[in-house]
Length: 360
Image 1 (cartoon, one colour):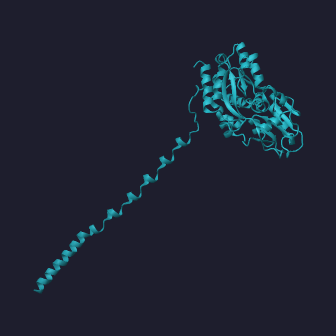
Image 2 (cartoon, one colour):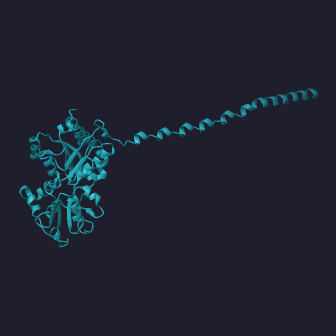
Image 3 (cartoon, helix red, strand yellow):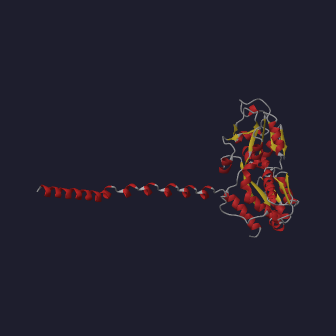
């Protein structure tokens, strides 16, 4: 009996060992431990395409809307004659330099003689191909153009914030009203303390663009006319004491720099070039800059133009090409010159005027 018992026990032990060996794989679920693929979701970590959305970030051209036919400056030749506004002069000069750098081999002559002088040459004597202007053309000037067979076409190229400036040594004027500015440039007062009692009892030294300048015309219209009326506005400034007029804005800059009691006005670009020696005065609490010029909150912001004629543009391909190039690239140069871009709508109107002048 004992022998049978031990035999049965041996059989049971052997069966248990076999069953244990067979069941062991079920106790070690190796595949469950090696779930590495789920942890190493490399594609999810390397989402480079989502980071490199360069096209959306580099929208530099932003030349939305109208575009003119492409111009190759090297493909045209001949001379271009420009005259007019001293304010627009540095902008046209910058565009001419770029036009020549891009291959134009002809000569571009640019004279700074004031807007009125420019229209005289363009509409009366017919000497120029393009007229720089810091104001729209007058009816009388357009009639002069018509008399010599020219039809003036307007191209808006930018915006200027007329800068009213004093010497950097002036420590009492920081802000004035339009009414005070009119009085400062009038025959009504002589000394600074007549404007505000706390200002020094020193003579006001005045510097103004000449009467042929579009800047002068604009100042009369925007500043003197509201204060003195149509009949006395120009007389008030022309008969003011201690005033110097010049068509050369650099002369005005030097004059204002020369005394802490001097004051002058001219295009923002000339102030921008001389910020160390001059300081701009805010008008009605608003300083001139790109934002205030564009939104109209600065009271002395004004448009800048160039003018030409359809026949000139069609007879002289170099003139049409230069104006095309000017309108296409002006916004890339205008801030460096010291002025501000025209609105998209104004620039597109200028481009449309170019197309119509060329019969397109």
